[in-house]
Image (cartoon, rainbow, N blue to C red):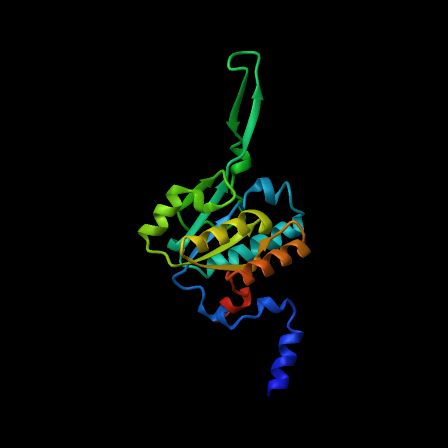
Length: 199
């Protein structure tokens, strides 16, 4: 029996994705969806990668209580030059901040962010504290940036932090896998998206 288990562990592709803890999710956990904006999904990702990401994100959203789904949008600033005063000023690119229409919008909880970690958003922290959140799942983009920083910061705030690799995109598959492995070694729990069907 031990030999069979050892063989299964060795043969499991992406061995750090194969955790029995996955069965815990995704009931009362809060889900934070980061930066599924047209600026990224239509401007930075290939059509195929964008659609696969959105399909996975929607799958997770559909397996989460709607009142526990939180959407994060990144600020996009534009530097403007003018012949009139003020000659140089900054404005927000509203179009770049638009959420992708293919994503399921099931709650009214939206927050905007101008930092790498979502836990720098006071409104979000107040919301989670008021709701007595304990477990938080984070998905979206990018693995090496906002996802990475937010998961680590969430742990510092005392939350049990989870990630679903299939609903996260990175700069490359290799870079994403490296980041996921690093985060798992630091205590971030991994949920395999296929386990959600068992809920």
